[in-house]
Image 1 (tube, helix red, strand yellow):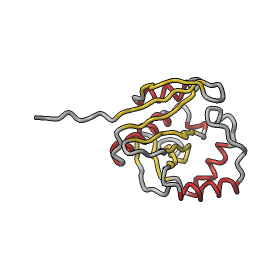
Image 2 (image 1 turned 45 degrees about the horizontal axis):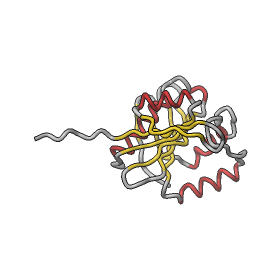
Image 3 (image 1 turned 90 degrees about the vertical axis):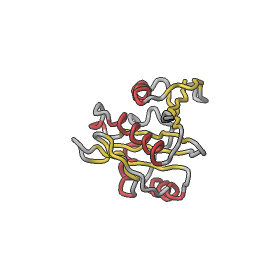
Length: 176
């Protein structure tokens, strides 16, 4: 979906995904080291990526953000999405910090927090949820630091343990 949401949070900026960004997405997603915790997808060709991008622009149930690190690297380093929009919440996922030079710079945490701020403050949602494999310790740590709580755990069709996590917007106290 074409959108105009953007946010700066510490060393990152979340910006709408542009056509010029998809070169990096394809490069990162074709690197098996980057995608070991993502759902399995086949090798992505340039043509595949173009078709995907055109389809994405028409999808009203998904917003993808390019993650720019703006203090040291000053370039796109990853992407994430808000999707599966419901009346009062949405899902955060498809998170990939593809540029290894951006690792260990709090890019993941700051990006997650930025996306949550967009969901709560701009989109007025009450909750954001996500799904993560239990073996993805780095991601679990980031989500816990961001305030997400485990709702349930289950075994996927691949035989891997996955958890469903949720973060609810804090309600402002009513003053009398």
